[in-house]
Length: 331
Image 1: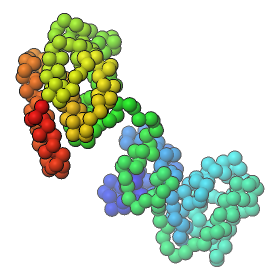
Image 2: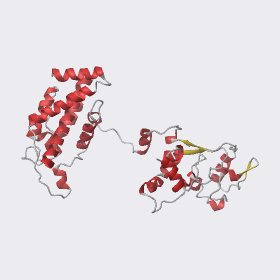
Image 3: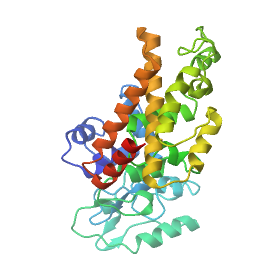
Image 4: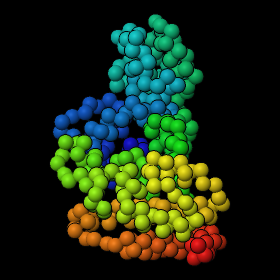
């Protein structure tokens, strides 16, 4: 949205923001304060200014819209911060002065430097000459100039870097069903509201497994210490030619260590995730709607889900989809 403000002048929202929040001056974005009368979104955008400031630079031409103290026009960033130790009182340039106001008959009208940083700014300023063209904003995310906005690139700049988890390829893989992969990601991180977690939050609930009603429910029990869920998974696993452990803590490493060709590995992961998603959704239906299904019914549902997913891949990956389907029906 900040990119829209500076680089999409024809945007209705950007026009409204400039006129109503910034009083028609886009450069006010860098200096106005958050206010109670502003919406949460407006104040949130203002709170991100320190992050995005280095990404929005000003190419100086006539200097009429480039403010000396607040605009990002020099390699030193915001000069109100860079010259803070020197103090603006010791560098008498008006708080709202533009570069055009400091330019007269081809020369810069600036005071003498009283510190090394002031000297650096003056030296850089002396390399510039104003022209008749209008000042322009430039987009420099990650210190690389760009002419368009890329959500993925900005996300990588904003998110903290972290090493890839060992189970990444077993959860996120090409050909998987997005909602299945997301649910499995929650399961691997133990973020699903199983009854043991609900009890740990101090809430009251029946601790027993909704499938077998003999042991307390947890991720480890549901997948696949539970005799009911194990009946479902062992059938699908066998169809994929996979001899599975029943222990959740060792299943992911076993899947990772299962070396085979890409088609077989994709079918295995697709089937595993389809079983997890089927079991979890049916578990929720038992809990909330008192709807019960037999293990055979869940097996057939998982098989249909897998078959439909393989068929859907034919549009973009015909050969790969055909290989998956042949393997699915052969096993």
